[in-house]
Image (tube, rainbow, N blue to C red; front, side, top):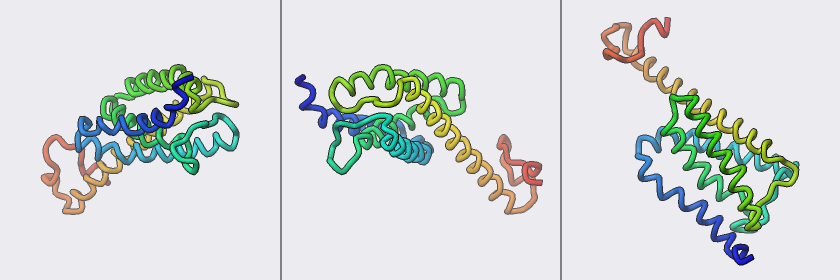
Length: 183
């Protein structure tokens, strides 16, 4: 097959192309969702380590012999895609889960076929439904991380206002910071 000789280039493109969309994401969204996206990249790396030990899947092609084949996916679609999904759906959990199901399903039932066809990767001891379940758990972890990050930020904002004194006029009208939150 003539595509096999271009598999490294395909991996490189998968890693680089998502980064061209970062400017459209916006600076504030990038800063807001980057920690959660880095967290999910770390989780994907751990899952890939477990998968390699248990032979759930196998990467035939890599960018470099000492670098895992999952690296282009981690630093490309997973990192940037996580930021985009959070930008469009954070705060709307049902929409978030539906979009993740569509994207993860497209990866599992569409892209995995082409990864096998191009000789890049294949599932070995893992069924596609199990891969989808792994992605589901990762999406819950991503949303949960972002949720707790936002909650601690809001709580931190309120506590810094409270440290200034117990005057209720310190809280601007329309904010969620009240003295009752901290008594």
